[in-house]
Every structure is written in structure tokens, then in C-alpha cells.
Image (cartoon, rainbow, N blue to C red):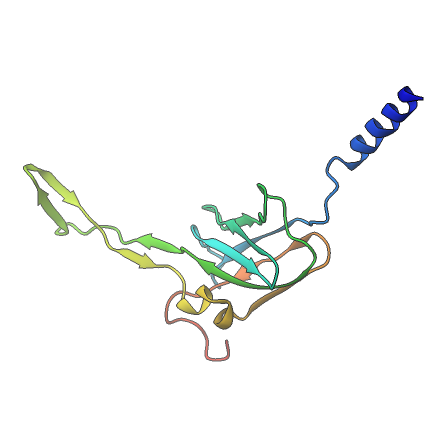
Length: 149
């Protein structure tokens, strides 16, 4: 009897490995010309869940809510993109003498996408998740959002 119960319990555990009420959400973030956003964080939120995915150098992301790349529970989400900051290439004359060391080139941070995309109230990005979803996003550089957007 104990052996049958143990086998049944083991079979149940094996069948449930990978079982989850979450589904995979991934995608790519690009500019209208097809070039990728190379850094940033995509944030998904609703009344009960907050999740995010880091954007890689080719513009791809996979959403994580509790564990690494574990996805989202089905539902409606508002989406925004944060931390999309790059750095200007230093110019020849931008170096500054630092305590007797050779010229150090310091560059200022640059916002890569329009601020509209940083807030769920202004981004216009919404996603209904029912099953595994590919959610590609087109973003615009600061000041380049078309009037209709």
C-alpha cells in the first residue's frame, strides 16, 4: 500500500514539474527603422501583478514575475519601458584632467526613447495575456513620436 501511494505521489510530482498558471511573454523592442532598443526594462503591471524583462543588445526581452523568465499570469496588463539610457560618444575635447592621470573621457547619459514610454499612463502600451505571447513594441526617440501616437 505504501509503495502504491509513494508511486502515485511521485507520478503526480513528475507530471506537475513545469506546471504553472503563468505563460511565457517575450518580444522585441525596435525603432520604426527596425533598429533595436539596446538597453532598458519592460515593465508589466495590473492590480495584482508586477513583472519585468530586461532588454538585451538586440532588443529582445523575456518577462519574469517571480522567478527567472517565468512569465505572467493571464490577464490585462499596462506596459512601460524604463532605464532606456545610453551615453553619448565622447568628443575629442570632452576629456578632463583627473588628479595627474591622462585625459579621462566622461560622457553624459542620453535618454534613448521618448519619455512617453516611461509611464503606463502615457505609453499607450497594453497587453491581454491569454496564452504564450510574443509582444513586439515600436518605440520612438525623444521628440520623434508622431502626432497621432
